[in-house]
Length: 108
Length: 118
Image (cartoon, rainbow over all chains, first blue to last red; front, side):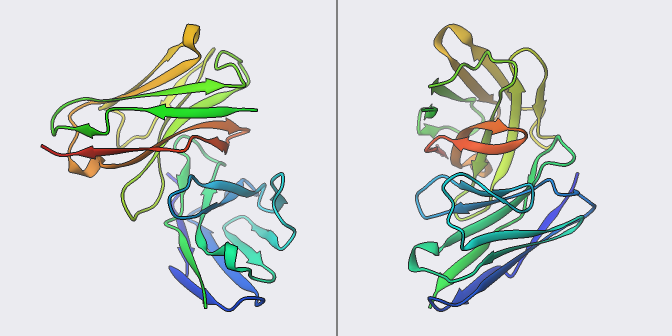
C-alpha cells in the first residue's frame, strides 16, 4: 500500500499571498496524483489530477506540480473562499486508493 | 448531470450491520467504463477508501475492511449498496458514494452521517 504524507498539517496565509502545500508518496506514483478541496459540511471537490491538470471549472490560481514521490499544490493568490482542507490522493497502484491526511488552510 | 445520493439509517447499534444505498441519476451504473465506490470520513479526520466496483468486472475492497464489507448492485434501480458488518464506534462518520473517472474520484454524493451507538 502506498502511504501519502501531507505537510504542513495546518497552513495560515493572508489573503492575496501564495500558499504552498506538499504531498509525499512512500514510493513513486508517477503523475497519478490528484488533489481535492473540502469545505466544512461539504463533500470533497476534485481540483487537480494527473499531478498538474486542473479539473473543469477550477480557477487558474490553483496549480499542481511534481512527479514520482514529491508533489505540490500552489494557490497563487489566496482568497477567503479557499479556506478548506486539501487532500492528495494517489491512483498509481490500486487497490487500495490512498489519501494523505490533509492540510487545513486557514486565512489570516 | 450526474448525481449521487446516499441513504441510510443514521444510527446503527454496535455489532450490527450497517446498510447504505447510493442512488445514481444522470448515468448508468451498468456502463462498463464506470467505476463506482464508497469512501468514508470519521468526524474531524481524513478520507478512507472503502471499496469500488465496476459492473461488468471486479469488486475491490480496502484490505483493512475487506472481511466486513460487501458492495452489491441493483441495476434495475440504478443503485448500489454497501453493507458493513460488526460495526463499532470506530465506524462512525460520513459515508460518501463516488464515481471514478480514470481512477480519480471525480463525482461525490453529499454524504450521509452514520453514528454507531447503543
